[in-house]
Amino acid sequence: MSGSPSRVARDEAMWEKALALRPNDTNVLCGYATFLATHGGEEGAEKHYKRCLEIDKNHLGALCNFAVLMENTERHVDACTLYERALEVDPAQVIALSNYGHILCRKGDFDRAEDILKQALRKYPNDVTVLHNYGCLLWEGRRDFRRAEEVLKRALKNDPSHEPSQNALKDLTKDKAEAEQRAAEQAAALLAEEEHKDSKSSSKRKKKKKSEQQPAAAAAAAVAAVAAASEEPASARSAEETRALTDLRVDAVDSEGVHVSFNVPVGCALSASHVQPQWDATLLPQCPLPPPSHASPLARCILLPFDKLPSRMGGHVLRLRIRSGKEEGPWSSELVV
Image (cartoon, rainbow, N blue to C red; front, side):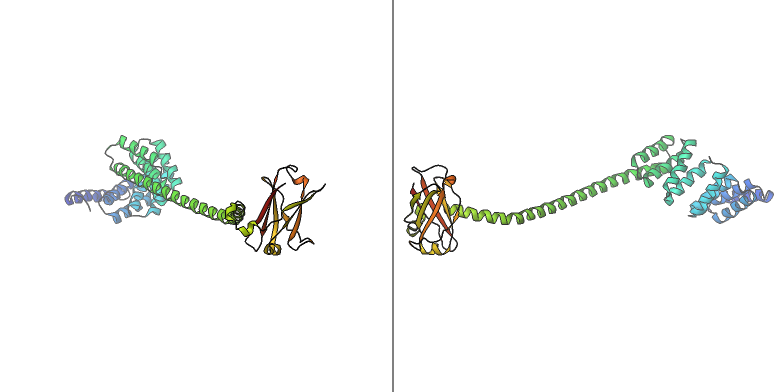
């Protein structure tokens, strides 16, 4: 047993003498059991608490103190049973309410624990132990750092020397800082993950857009190449190409329009794809290369309808360009109409 050996021995002898005189006195049995439990004699204490409760099953002191012994020896189920029995006898018993709520909190039954501790606070709003236990529930069970800190500070206001509340508030402050740090790190990780997802999605959209644009870009490049070729300066074209459409002339003008004839080179006659007429700066509708005339296998004739011409005859420049599917081309020539 703990304590001064001589004093503990003297006190134990006194309790044994009292018990010998009154062996069925429940207060003596409960007092002796509590003495033994306080000085490390758990086995003897349990024996005398049970004897007391056999005589009086509703002995409040024995129920509460026996429950504390069960709690201290990690027999929480037995402790809860004893606290429940004590509360049946006295629903406002502060030790039973406070300790029972604390055990329920340790077991993870936070809702029931909070109900019990709030019931205790309604009866004993300034009880330091109840405030401490409720503050610990809010901290460890609910993770409500703000309210837990307020309740623990209330406990210390009532008893500044209450060591359990001092230690709990210190540990809470440290835990709160660590929780805030973890939350910040998790937020940063989530943000980085979302940014990575957005980046990947953006990259996929760009690739998809690029793949969709490639055919159009190829077509645009082809059109640009044709346009660039059409804008070649006359000095860049060979003499052979410039001579290719000699004999460009107006054969006739009638109600249909302007009939134009020209000669083409042999390669063009075999593979040219279309004729592009141009009236001053206006491109007229393309037309297929017409078949040869009876006069010559190289002679061709096309009609320029009046409804397609921006203006009638008189000082206008007519230019014909032929694109060939296989020859280098284009071949062109012009005259004033």
